[in-house]
Image (cartoon, rainbow, N blue to C red; front, top):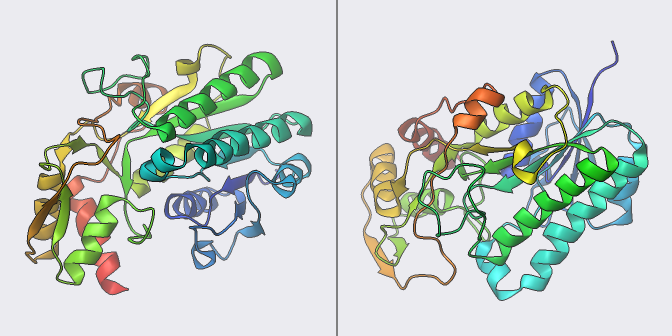
Length: 316
């Protein structure tokens, strides 16, 4: 039996490298494509091949056209919501332009390659619906980042209907876990871990009552393996191939900080700063469709996930 071949864009990042580990463990041959703008070469598994390239580049397109891949997991992105607000043109260039470059390459390869797209369940629905957000809810993102992610899903649906592209969109809630970068474009859990280790106060924007759905990175990686094994899906409307990945549990930033301090066994002060423009008030996703259609549910609780994540940061 021929070994199945997977390409992971953004595979040197914290989610992408964890997905690479999961696919290798499931018997896939894995190639990682990353421009190392935020990912780290050291995080690419030793058993994976590596191509240093930007998803907007001709090299990325050629790699897909000629690589004979059965699966493309597309995780490379401009991931900072704040940067998308200050520089929306760059966000569009990477998150829409780069994604379309990959879709077109899959089309031109002539292969029945499945694409799994890392979309957002945290930013795509906006504040005009009442959580927990279901895949079919109206989309009205609050940020250019969320707009670009949903626009990419619309392009995927177009390529599916017109060109037969086989894809799955996984709409992540707030992913956290080992390998997340606490510097630059980072999630709050990684930043809080580093500050607790350094004995510094945790900065909370606004009143800290804004909520998110925090899902452990290992659970997200497992969803990619399950999505890779789904039978071919029919082309349809954009939500038909989308699955939310979260915990269906709403946690405020203040509660997150207190839970993490308990996991760390250390107390540091909470400092409040002004609220940030473009930030959603509430975000939590329904995962009933993922349970039914992917056979997926999160296995790691927030308390356990924070304990593992803090332990990883503390051991560095």
